[in-house]
Image (cartoon, rainbow, N blue to C red; front, top):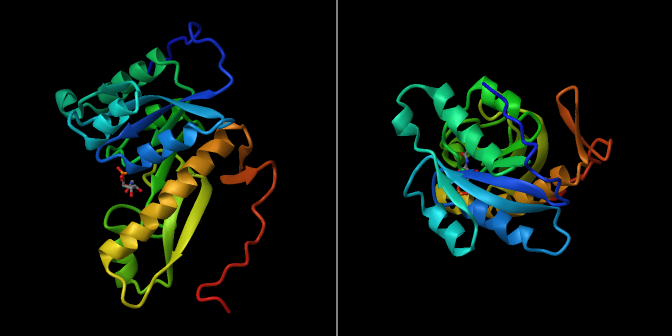
Length: 228
Ligand code: GAR
């Protein structure tokens, strides 16, 4: 994949973020909202979707955010060409950081390498548990006591990569998939803006596959569910 120059991009104090979506975009909306806060170190410069009628695109437009569509279907099975087209759009918008937010396409290793440690993903489970789809159903079936969401850097392997932040919810005995999903989604909307803030501030480093914050491992939060 050609890496084109971004020399026409002037250095900005706030990082320019592209949010990639395939659907309703509630995490995207949470990032847009968070970025409005004074002092937030990133701004949402672009919302990019592989689906022309993704619900989140309308939300983004209403919020005054620029949008773009790269329709994967027009590339057939050529994933590399689709990724190149996305990369070109990201470069054209002088993007510093990419946030996958319900972006349901597998990315090529070439693309993930170009955005290494500059591309985040949110997954609705406590990785490395429950990679893939139907995470809430599977957490209930596994009789898990805790469940949650993870923000991580993207690597070629799906739903893997250094973990930046996780948020936990207790699983209730009478939980339904919908109820659990709603509580996890609330957590997602908190941890994604918080994780992006840390990354945009340059406070996250990756050492031996683990994220350190300000050079430190995260202290033991000591949370037990149910509380002991
Ligand atoms: C979110 O729950 C996100 O964690 C999940 O898709 C949903 C998108 O919702 N992502 C994945 O499952 C990726 N492996 P949203 O469009 O309302 O943000």
